[in-house]
Length: 313
Image (cartoon, rainbow, N blue to C red; front, side):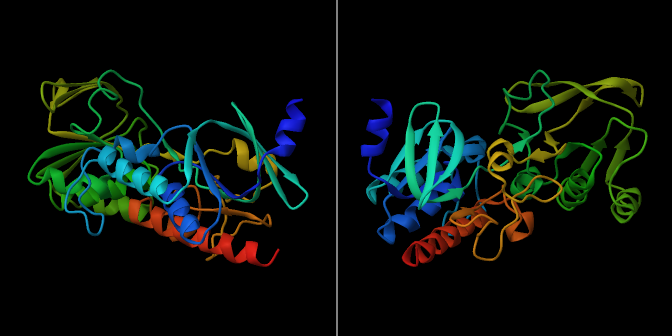
């Protein structure tokens, strides 16, 4: 009976897996090309909904991530598409398309866009989750402007942390870079720039234990003393210990990934599997610049490419 019900379901032209900026933009463009599409995702907006203030999206002077998600959602629905909060378990190739199996239902589609985003690695310490957007950030490119003439800390010892510290030093009065090993893992040229920058203070072989605040971040607790104290008074914390693209679905179906796990796409958002496209932070597109504007651009490109593909199959 269940199999019969699945067989009778209407086949979608396109199913978009991921309900962040890339996935929602893809849906908007797909609907404008009259493609019957469905958005499936575990969290509406993805990491966009965690951003406190956005001031670098063209045409929007200032807004919150939650408010931007609402605008995207309203536009998707106004164009006739549907968003379902379900976790996709498996993508199965079938004749003339794919079967999408979620934790709630099974769907058929002629094409797929993977817009799964990526997940920031967390410290999982007291204060981190509670104060996100209130002095804690995972994106220096996004939020550095909010810390003009402020004291901040960057956590991490790789390239991302080094680049964040250098960027923040251009506007902040002092930048601590805190890393748990004896030496940073960043490129030598970045380390040299940090060493020669009087605004940046390195704290090696140290971990954060806690982030404390009243209205905004004001203090962090270290597991070792720095200048005679386990406490640092500051205004913001940038956590730059990496971000991981989800690989469960992509590996299962045989999507080609780079060494870091990002989906390899061409300029059209095409993957190595015919009929499957990808967009946003999960891809190698846009030079891995994880910004809302690049995610929405890739979403639009992948939807147009899916339309052109479906015209010819």
